[in-house]
Image 1: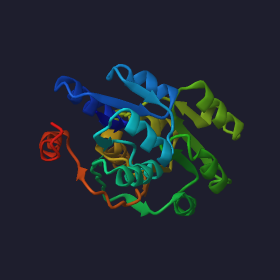
Image 2 (image 1 turned 90 degrees about the vertical axis):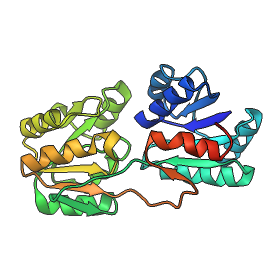
Image 3 (image 1 turned 60 degrees about the vertical axis):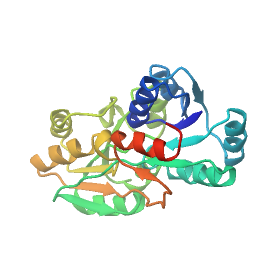
Image 4 (image 1 turned 45 degrees about the vertical axis):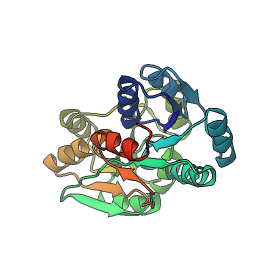
Length: 250
């Protein structure tokens, strides 16, 4: 049994490939929304967050022989926990890591605090494409600026943004990834001076954001992903068959 840590479009592609090759697997997601998507790509779906101990217990009960971590590039706590659990249970761990790209108009920063400091120096209208999880930190850090937050069009997510004080013209409820044209249109319509994003990689629509902003000469602040020391890392689905063969799983 293969245990796929999901929540990204990458994990869905991996699930489709595992289904096509008749590999038994469980697709794990953390949210109800993720579960809805996951059930379109996997028969066996687990929804919930697991501690290291819970991972070890579940993997033992499900006879898991391999873990594929295809979580979001910024879900580093999950990745670190999974690596620790794999080490403890002696189960092979594979990290599917998105490749990243950038253009000349980017400002690379280490965290949200630094992103807010740089944004304050660059403009007044800040277009956020970092999701809703860290929105409270941005609202606090960009207190005197006009924030436009692009977030999922889900009721509890929209509500949480409103509870932070954002009003209708500061919220774009849409699901990505977005094309370059869609990004450009939204940046123009909102009159954005600065775009803040995360180093999410190609599948997260990262390049389309950068290109749209470059065309409009809007600076982009990119929050770098935390670098982890993965035991096995792949960047493309085509690498998976060979790795599974080497691990005697495929």
